[in-house]
Image: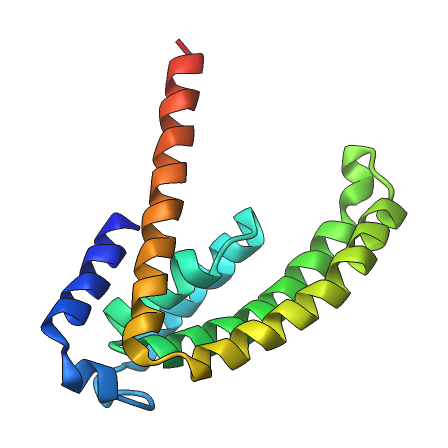
Length: 161
């Protein structure tokens, strides 16, 4: 996450006009590379419930050379489908853990309406912000998530001693 923040900071500082202006799928984005990024997104989204800013966007930027705005849009679309598949599978197997599906459905019913509104507002804001501001927000997000992850790992390591 820190590396992704540095990667984006480099583009921001250099004001890499070529990277900022790119749109669409680059010619060098091979089917194998795209499949690898997609497989890792789906695997970690299903396994850990993560994917968007922490995995999907950086994977597309670094390996597929997509601009930030395109990567964010692709990430939102991909997460919608991986989320549905993950939710169906996980709800179908809750009984194995002594949990009721109704608990999960009730929580989802409370989360979904506001998540839809948040998704709409986030998508709209992505296109209202200029590229540099969007990249700066993404850099800060990566640094915050990286710091939280490191703190939790450090705490877990010291608690296990």
